[in-house]
Image (cartoon, rainbow, N blue to C red):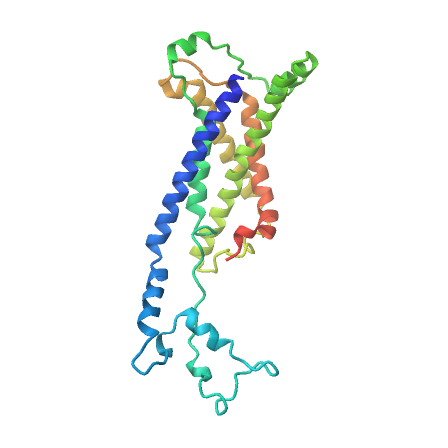
Length: 284
């Protein structure tokens, strides 16, 4: 029950952080993209010129679409100018530029993805802190595990002894440790490819094509090593009580956490090409 309560507290805190971060990101996008308000103001000034007709020199997208699609159903061409004087010529049709990529899609949303992931990583691995550290440390029963795959043996023993709820929660925590580091591998490889594309002045991977390419083995090993290092750093932070902030090891230190976290980082890197081929969030 204590584990479930801690998970609920972490999940509630993370949901609040995500909500606040997304609202701030949305406000930042509105502030940095004044084209919407500018387009409305431009439409109001250009929609009523002195001669009563719309000036095609500064048409907005809404005003240009009826002109662009005023075509013959039989040929698909523009209607004859002689019979329909209001139909514009090709030169009079304004060039409508494609809108910029949304701040909610890659690559512009990459900083937001990193912020949300790192916030979740810190919350789920280091929080909540005990409200009364001295009393909490006096009553803690340490279940630290320094034997590789010892947690799997513990899960099997709990089910064998009839402690099904405890064994289920322990098994679920193992799966969550894997899932926790899957975004790390995917985000690290995505950041690498987007940065290389910018350095080479190539098209950014807004359609997922670049991200769907195969990943070299050496780079997979680099991301896996980084994932293992970050996991070891987290376990060391837990072992030292957040570097002395709590006077004891207030979280379970488990070597299997490092193993499962590393597996998660590997899966994130390996699954990225598959996700990029099908993910809707990659579309521009």
